[in-house]
Length: 147
Image 1: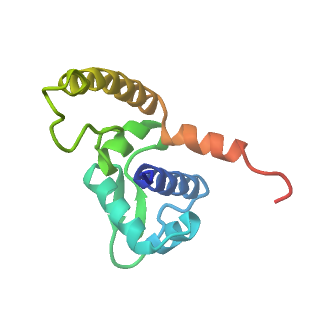
Image 2 (image 1 turned 45 degrees about the vertical axis):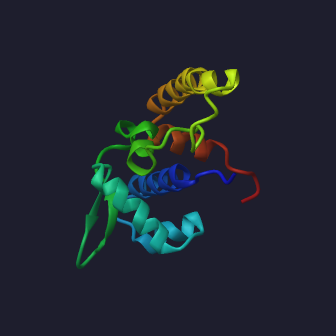
């Protein structure tokens, strides 16, 4: 099963916007963000569109067009980013009803639902405690030497 990278791409875009803002560049184009993520600008525009609908970024059209943070990086949590781009739970249950005549089939969904619920709450707490500013700070701290 492939991992969903929507949260990672959106976070990368926001951290790049935060760094640009810190350096005095208030607006970046989707092409500039895509170059940092090393992906197609269409993917970035889709992600930034989700973030705009959630009130995390603003878009400027016309002369000086591009994207900027709608709030300070310290005020944007990874939980907000997650909810903006991928509100899916981390784990899913069976796509079809298990055999209810089987003792495992009868009890597996409630058992896993409780365990998965606890995991999801732990994930949400950690994401809520981490801001875009935190990720930027850690990103800049973890730079390889020699570059």
